[in-house]
Amino acid sequence: MNRKPHVAVLPNLGLGHLIPQLEFAKRLVVHHGIHVSLLLITTNEPSPAQDQLLSSSHLPPDLHIVPLPPVEVDKKIINDGDVLVLTRLCVITDHSLRSLKSVLIALGKPNALVTDIFATQAFDVCKELLIPTYVYVTTSAAFSAFMLYLPKLDSDVNCEFIDLPEPIQVPGCSPIRTHDLLDQARNRKIDEYKWLLHHFSRLPLASGIFVNSWKDLEPVSIKSIKENPFFKQIPTPPIHPIGPIIKQEETLSVVDVECLKWLDKQPPDSVIFVTFGSGGTLSFEQQTELAWGLELSQQRFIWVVRKPTDSTGAGTFFNAGEANENDPKVYLPEGFLDRTQGVGFVVSSWAPQVTILGHHSTGGFLSHCGWNSVLESIVHGVPLVTWPLYAEQRMNSTMLVEDIGVAIKPKMEAGQQTIVGRKEIERVVRMVMEGEEGKVIRSRVKELKESATKALDSSGSSYESLSCVANYWKTNHN
Image 1 (cartoon, rainbow, N blue to C red):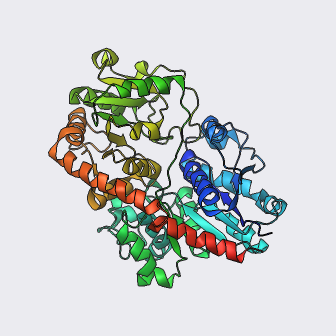
Image 2 (tube, rainbow, N blue to C red):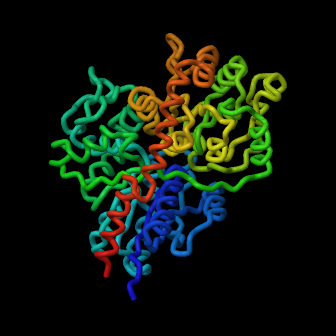
Image 3 (cartoon, helix red, strand yellow):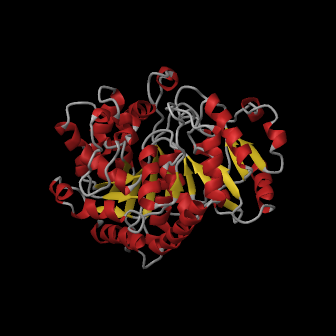
């Protein structure tokens, strides 16, 4: 009997990592005949959103969830405002993967393991067990190129990267302005940067790199990683653009159903959806300005409101999905809900993003530019207003506006480095929903929507890219 190859997939903590790798695992099973074990990093702290995602997902028969033994997380690490998100993530992962060897042996040593970029400890374990290891990059090809270039940049530059007089020139790719750099690369003395450099410098150890993108979306970056002499001499592992892989199904709550009923009554392309992903939060001052900007724009909107925070933009990264007992009214300008009744629909904490973006009434998306949200917007043909908060989101925002042409970016007020004012919010919301520039980017995003569908068709570039690796696994498993 010709048994199926068995592949283990290891996502990291956070829905932004889990969702695309769960969908990737499903594609391997359903479209390519692979048996998959999805290895889950777990802790003693509950993760309501993760639990709901896994319990509500319709998993195909050959996809099995395998939780790694839970890590006892020191509450000081999770709650200490001085310990930043990436450091927490990496410390927890480091502890969790101490059990990886025994788990892989218990699974009968899979034919390959696909790991998260921040779980490269798996390389060492798999080398010992003679298991080929691949990396799944949950962000763009442009960021993948930056990851591969960072060790060279680190060795060549002595000062802080943000003090460089010119943009950073990743070979063959669009230059990166220093103010667009991800937070973890803005201070080379902190632990977050050291973790970043550690994991990125290990990328060449992979047997291949899966990127959640496709040729038409990022032709320059993908071509550069494959062909530029710099990347060839690293040597860079084979890169496999397999996207766009996005969430396909959502379980609807009573509030979600109400929201969608309201959306059903609105005209086509008339509603802007405002949300900041599973982990994003705003300061109180910025949330107030956003409320006034939406009201002044006189555009229909759905807004996912969370309790504001004045510390980090990633305020709910580790507790996404937890019930927020605070009424969002408390954090909005007095009378806002009354004045926008019928025009806007405010929900607390969470909304069915993919369902809303796929609705015919949705015509714009004000987003934090997490890569999953970017892909969901493009797949559904919805233009964006970019509002980056953390991680690589500023780089994504610039790429969407300047390279891909599907977004508008608000400007900060003169002399103001952190707050976008209400008049500017009014301007960009009106522009994307009814302005001439909005029509241009709407046309461009509709083109890419068609391109995304073709890329995933059985004759498309992304399908063939994944099929090529799946066929290799089929012909080389014992």
